[in-house]
Amino acid sequence: MAKDLFYTLDLNLIKTFMVLMQERNMRKASLRLFVSQPAISQALQKLRNHFDDELFVKVKTGLEPTPFAELLANDITPHIDGLAGAINRSHQFDPAEVNNKIRIALSPITMTCLPGFLFKQLQTLAPNAQLELVSWSNSTIEEILKGETLFGVNYELILSNKEIYTPKLLDLKGRIIVRSGHPITKPHVEPKDLAGYPIASLISPGWNDKFSYASELLTEMSIEHTIGFRSEMVTAILDVVRHTDMYLPHSNLFPVEQYPGLRALDITINGQPQMKSVHAHMHVRNRNNPLINWLTDLIQQGLMQQGDK
Image (cartoon, rainbow, N blue to C red):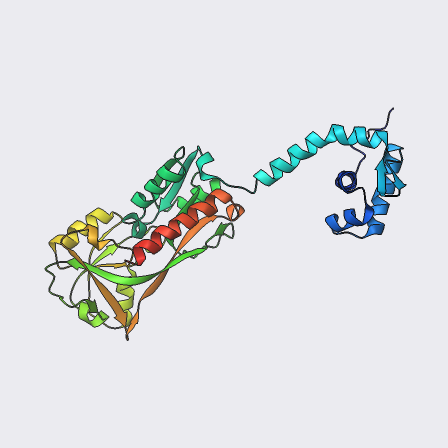
């Protein structure tokens, strides 16, 4: 049975062969491949034994390929170029080439500032993509693990599953949202200023399903309070705040300028702003995915734009 020259060949030797064909010089080949000249000599000897041909002979100017080497190089060059192109393209990303559905889960705290920004950016930069935004739910992590949802944006969750990667996108500054005619009139408040006013608590599934972060904070400080209303629906919370003296604990992500009749108050504790971070949540296998990296950069940009207002 004839020897199978392909499957018995160390393909690393082909790279050495092609560089020798291009350089016709052992020293230059070793510099390009970042190996020693003896290593190039050893590789060439293995190639000679494999193909039973001299491949290159020494001449005054360096190395001269044999007719077999020239024929071999001519035959394999298109395949090597194709392989190189495929590998290099895999590290290049052009959003204009994205033509599939992009499903992203957003927590309630980002729902008032990200959808319009994301849609406009994708419409411009990735016009063939189909953006699908869904509310973060208790099943979102499982959907990310299954690949049904590309990734999500939420507060950092305490997860036991090591398959979820959660890079931080932004630090948020705490703010209180109240109606324009609310009895609290000053532009920034301390927790004691909120005593007696009910909390309109925005539920972020998977993060504060069974508690109110603001309520826990006020309890620790022995400040009188009640939870007047809870909902995952931002529109429902805002409607209640418009019609009552309840306040919505939120952040500098809330685009108060888009909601006539509402005011944003900065909140500090002992003179320091209350800070929370928002994170992307993705499968660890996608941490270097070019599409997800591009989208997280885009989302970070959108969050920073709103947060700076």
